[in-house]
Amino acid sequence: MRKISKSVLIIISVILLIGGSYQFYMYKTNNFHVVTNNILYRSGQIRGDHFSYYEKKYHYKSILNLRGKRNLKHSKWYKDELEFCQKNNIKHLDYKISSTKFIHKKEIDKILNLMSELPKPILVHCFGGSDRSGLICACWKYKRENKYPKIAHKQLSIRYLHFPYFGNKSTAMDKSFWNYVKKSEK
Image 1 (cartoon, helix red, strand yellow):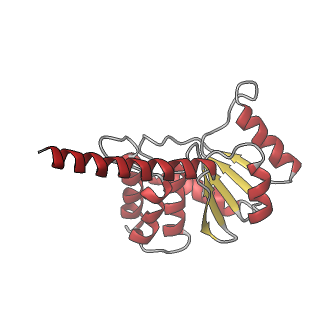
Image 2 (cartoon, rainbow, N blue to C red):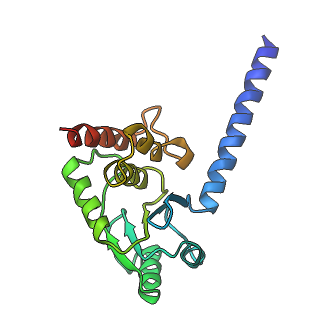
């Protein structure tokens, strides 16, 4: 019995170590990923001088902030983001959606239409870069790039730290995506 318990403990420890290391890596890199080169990128909230690093490397011309407009007095990250965009002639758009609430097709279409009008490439971000960014990028891949739903849905995966399991309310993003596909096919 003790051997089984030790083995299980070792396996759990290794899983936690690997998972924690990956999460730390994603935090340090702002969970930044190429969705479609020269068209669409995604990330979590970019911090500090990372804005310059990613802009120099990927030359995005627009930022879509899915966290919504913030009070400049109380949100340093928001103020820094707006200043960076103004200084570098980057179009900035705020659109607030929740990572735990169902997003209807009409609202997703509104976001995708706004994105179509933005100068490319676009950087889409939310807080962690996993749920809201994943939903919008998945819908973009499906609707604008005509990817099969299962391919597009990969934007909502553990690879990007999207973890809709064990009662996590971010399942709303998966439900929103599959509803979007279903309603788009009518």
